[in-house]
Image 1 (cartoon, rainbow, N blue to C red):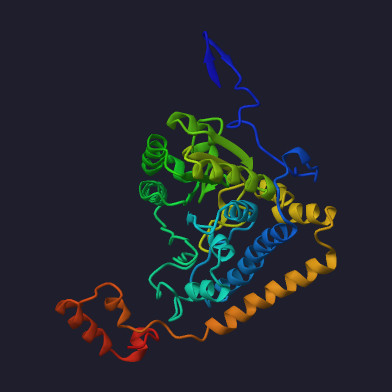
Image 2 (cartoon, rainbow, N blue to C red):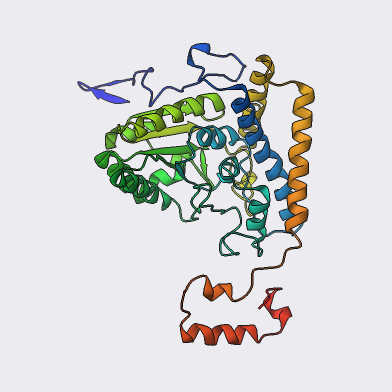
Length: 380
């Protein structure tokens, strides 16, 4: 609400920070005037990316429940936001992720085996077991390793974009965050700096309405999160985060705008965390799961599948084959990576120091002398 001469007036419904941009709504109705240009193969690739997240998450969460991995965080219900945003980037662009964006890394080239290796933290893991599961990073995919500290990645994203601008690189940075991150000082610092420097960055907030157990209603008193953009001199857009075409369209426009030197954009993608915050949480203890059931009926994958079927870009037989293929790919990745041993023990010190200090050499020698069973399978 805004104050007008002592009275309270409603905010204009056509304000992009208040209204919800949609192309395919919950009923399947398509606003053809807003449809972005996508080649058929690109549309099918986006669908594959979304399906990969769903199938991969289901399989790996089951493994966590079996005690085969230690931790997992699903992106169930948020696949349209993850893949729609990633699909709008060019190969020269960078993605600085939040917790549920691993599917974007895979979409941009991280292999399933590399991701599963990271979950296990084995010798094939690009980070050699030095990150919590679900925290992949890939220089080749220009996907920065995530931090579990809320919002710390947003100044990094803006700094990366500013560096690209100073160097004259033709790169845009997508900085991802959740609704909870907008309550952190890092968000203010980053958004303010992005506005002042006109850095080529897109700040993309996946508002899944829960910051672990804190609902969005306790996170902010503003009518939307997107409206916060105005305080930093940024254009703000609120988009249906379960409509992959809408997400792609608004992020693509923001990326193009940034690449043309017009500065940053702040986007709020309204979605819902259907699953638990992580394998360590139980959402039934703090939220009304009847609301969750309502959001399950807004499934982003089902919505996009219906669109593809209607456009004759997919049929049921092809969809069944695709799901079976992805499932087999995930199973093959797990079968290949689960037996791989832990990283060599010496990587604890040699991956940090080019010239290992003597005190660390002494500590390493003490650890290496321990019986193998005390090292948890780590080999020297």
